[in-house]
Length: 314
Image 1 (cartoon, rainbow, N blue to C red):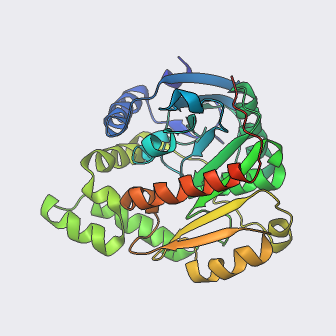
Image 2: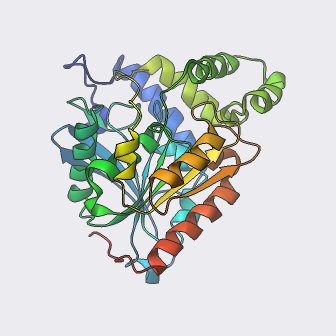
């Protein structure tokens, strides 16, 4: 399958350092997937930028198969396993597709760069077309939030709505976020007894989920990401977005300034809904999964009730 190959032919794309490291990492990923429901299907779809690996879930209710499906786009340095706390709730009444972004440590295989905004939007549009999806609710976290916001700007035709979970694309990524990433990675080496205290201090749920911790530690050693941090959208670009938009921010986020964006985004994006989740930082969908799942489902239902077409792909 395409996900078993390394992709070292182009120095501008993400790659595994070797096959042995990749296979150890995949085993760790499978342990994280096992924390949630098993997908009903896995498949690979081809785009001009590479092979995209996709997981399909549900719907649990067979009568909901005609509802507009959900597509999940994970954060940088991760893969679709990060959605294990969310897929059961989201797939109860809708088909859910979780996509491994090419260039990140998942089972997709990148052949061309996609970090440029227009290329990223083209890649995702081609992947959705290959899946037979003509209308979707798109949900993205962190870098996946930038991909989702970018899609609403450049290729909104297939989008019923966009949900952004503490996303990139609203502010320039500052030093404080990179420091948090570095300290969080260092904290994965801490003794087990200290990890809960560090997790609370850093708002970092990865430290107290052994499977996530193991996957992150192996991923850093096994995979090399080759892309710059995305630039934020301009105010003019945000003003041009017409797709229904829901923004969920962690109160202690170090990627964005939550209060600033709570005021700014609804002012720029017509009809945008913005909420701040207390007692969390950059991972609200992990450490407050039940609450965030309920909020996301409520938003998707509200969009559907407003008369958005409800069609699913084949």
